[in-house]
Image (cartoon, rainbow, N blue to C red; front, side, top):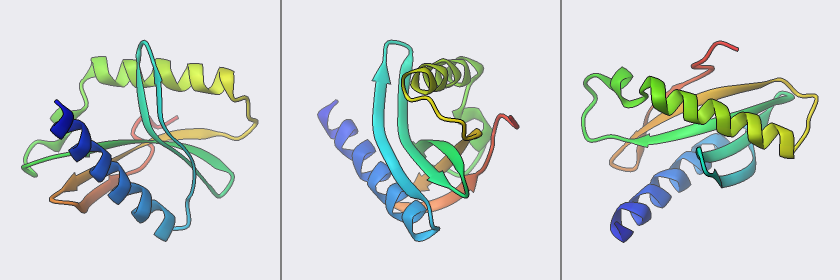
Length: 113
């Protein structure tokens, strides 16, 4: 389990570095509550962006990595984060896939809010 967490941290580090190179400011990482965890909280162009980082071994069926239950947990966690950290900024949820410490794809606004 510890090795998996270390691997997850490395993937999040790779993602954070990528986001910063793309002009995002990293506001926070690993916000955890009972319902779930937000991997990265960023900001760019006056938008608060919550980033779910998924490390994958295969590029097939990427849409299966975020289940409705996971999306529900993320939404609840985002709501709680926004209550604790009020902002007038709009927000969105992004998903970044990483394979072998490289960015595969960055899916923006996966909930279309």
